[in-house]
Image 1 (cartoon, one colour):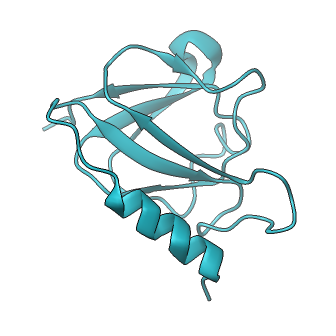
Image 2: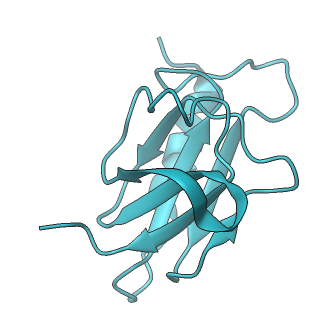
Length: 116
């Protein structure tokens, strides 16, 4: 069952206008699998809205994410090291779980066109 907070975050996420650039990405990183987080903890859910293709580091300590929701077209490559290095995973749709090498260890990402 989704909490009111989760539903509000999804509504906020859906209301953000899509940029005209072809590589724009909006996604939510969730601390736990199946789009959940600890409601009494600080953090646990991060909304990322990045519209270009450069490499973006996710904070000083990375992100503790175990699922990703996405509401738009496009793909992102997530890495387990800063500066878009290390093992990577291409994400194009919402994922209730993410690959184990990224679980609790997402450090950077880059937007790109989805493979055809």
